[in-house]
Length: 105
Ligand SMILES: Cc1cc2nc3c(=O)[nH]c(=O)nc-3n(C[C@H](O)[C@H](O)[C@H](O)COP(=O)(O)OP(=O)(O)OC[C@H]3O[C@@H](n4cnc5c(N)ncnc54)[C@H](O)[C@@H]3O)c2cc1C
Image 1 (cartoon, rainbow, N blue to C red):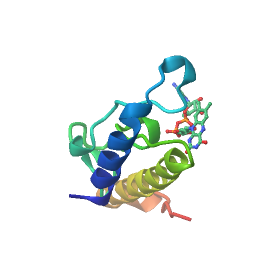
Image 2: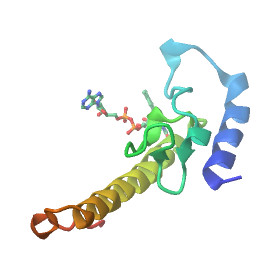
Image 3: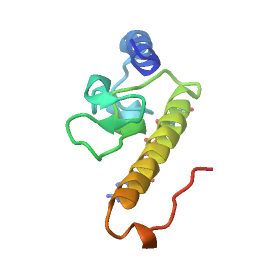
C-alpha cells in the first residue's frame, strides 16, 4: 500500500459521515482513482504521459488544510515528474542539442 493510497483511504473513511451536499462543498470526491495512477510520479497508468494532481484525483480530506497539502504535494510531484519526462524525451530525440534542460526548484 502506497502512502498516497493510505491517505486516500483514511480521508474517505473520515469524510463519509460529514457529507453535507454540493452547496456547502469545499472539496469534491471522485476523480481519477489512485490505483490508476503511478503514485511515485503521479503519471496516469491509463494515459501515459499525463500527470495528475489535486482535485482531479479521487483524494479528499476533512477541512483543516489536508486538501491544500494534497494539492501542493501531488502538484509538485506531478510537475517534477513531467519535467523529468520532458528532459528524457528531449535527450532521446533528434533535436536534443537545442532542448533546454528543465530543472525543479
Ligand atoms: C470554499 C472552499 C474552502 C476551502 N477550504 C479549504 C481549507 O480550509 N483547507 C483545505 O485544505 N482545503 C480547502 N478547500 C479545498 C482546496 O481549496 C482544494 O482542494 C484545492 O485548492 C485543490 O487544488 P487544485 O489545484 O487541485 O484545484 P484548484 O485550486 O481548483 O485549481 C484548478 C485551477 O485550474 C484552473 N482551470 C480550470 N479549468 C481550466 C482550463 N480549462 N484551462 C486553464 N485553467 C483551468 C482554475 O481556474 C483553477 O485556478 C476549500 C475549497 C473551497 C471551495
